[in-house]
Amino acid sequence: MKKKFSLLLSVILLLSLFLAACSGNSNTSSNTNSEGEATSGDSDSSEGSAEQVLNLTDTQDIPTMDSTQATDTVAFNAMNQVFEGLYRLDKDNKPVLGMAAEEPEVEEKDGETVYTFKIREDANWSDGTPVKADDFVYAWHKIIHPDTMGGYASMMGAAGIKNGNEIITEGDPLYGKVEELGVKAVDEKTLEVVVTQQVPYFFDLLTFASFYPQPSEFAEEQGENYSLEADTMLYNGPFTLAEWNHGEGWKLAKNNGYWDADTVQLKEANYKIVKDEATRVNLYETGSIDRASLSADFVDQFKDREDFTTILDTTIYFLRMNQKNEALANNDIRKALYLSYDRDGLVNVLLNNGSVAARYLVPKEFLFLNDEDFRAPAPDGYLADQTADDAAEYWKKGLEALGTDKVELEFLTTDSDLASKIAEYAKDQFESKLDGLTITINKQPWKQFLDLEDAGDFDISTGGWGPDYPDPMTYIYMFETDGAYNRMDYSNEEYDKLVTDAKTETDEQKRWEMMQEAERILIEEDTAILPTYQGGGAIIMKDYVKNYHIHKFGADSSLKWVTIEK
Image 1 (cartoon, rainbow, N blue to C red):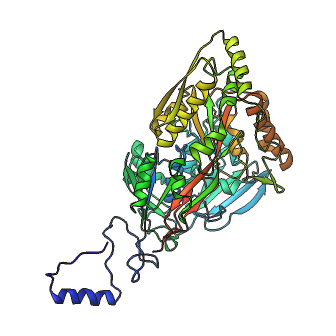
Image 2: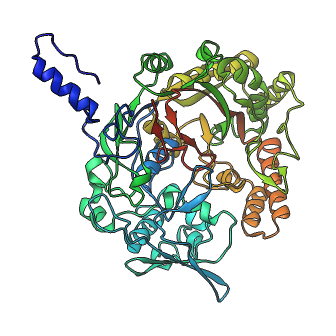
Image 3: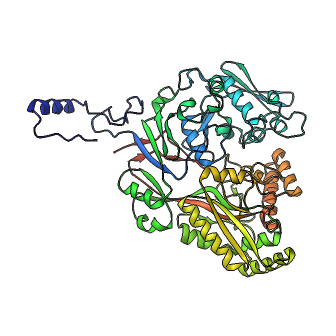
């Protein structure tokens, strides 16, 4: 920030400041909370260079910073900036070495594959203590232990790690025996991982938060307080969580102890929680933030500007229909809801941000086998040839089976501006086309929303799923019977068998066909979920923000390579 000088300042002081400026010793920013070292992008490294501070917003607070407990995009994105696993996603969405010093040694032994990873000698936690192999063992055991089991516990089995599925399956002889997981610390810097089932996305998975290490000794000292505040956790990623003002926002600061700190140009990144879109746009226009997402209300205002762009992402949005509810347990009722929803009106009018109507679970233009999109057998999804007239017929049939002419349902959603609009849109679609239906909207803050959804305490809930790894299974496995993300009491034996068989099928073509058939059963036959749209993004971003990388799976973005070039 430029300083204003009074005309009463002495000539000597003015001269000294002038000479200092000419010699390249410019004043540093008043933002002193970060501890970034001077690099080619830092404000104190050369005359006229930009201050390396990025200002952003989010619509929700971080629900948790415990990598074993996280289940949502807000948490995963925050963690990606401050933690690092054996690998991390690079600028091109490829897994590259993170905490691993080199590619692992691979040994085939007794029908199993043993990966031996060497942890970097210069890999340290933010307090200067070394990242140890045992920190990985500790975290991986924690996520699958019955007392601390996380929502993503199944990721150990998804990676093919020995006994990963058995340890989390009640009734299995190995249930709860975390020491039987195929991972061990050979020594302080050597980690051994045993895989009994090869999956093509193994190294992609290792970039994900569920596979991060945790500082075992520090975490044990903190006990229940671990990860609750910025100062009750340690960091091994490009940044540290310098501040966390719950409900207001958080601040990242460059981690000078990070092994690749020379690459990191940003000194800090500030996130402010802003639920209202008009407020976000105003903050952007006044220069208070550097990037913002837009919905239809503002797209026309910005669409011709150079700082505007749209993207089609890989997140699928859908409605969960809880079959614990008597009405929603009826397939005809579910089909009526599915067919009464105008997806085109949603994406073209309400959203208008590059999103596309979806009647499918696995997105288009993302996953390919032999250059063929996963969507090829059903490019438009399912039940696309049926209309709102068909919805009325299904509704009538469903009401007759229930012996009633009225149905009341609660619609659970979050309290963000866009989520509220989408919920109101759904309410109007359903009530205007299905006689006797009453929808009550229940808006909750993000964390409370997740808690209610996890508990199955809803009739209809708004859902969305971004891929954790680049494979159709990251979507398909969600709706297995009693799956952690099923949440709606859906069960189909044929669906379960297809998913189970696909997990072990080595013929990729057969494997994809199994998952395509499972998707068809889920939506066309059982109509267990109501897909609404494949997410797009209308984005405005200052032209001086460079190398802001968006990921197609895992965390939404990486700030490691961002620079501010004014």
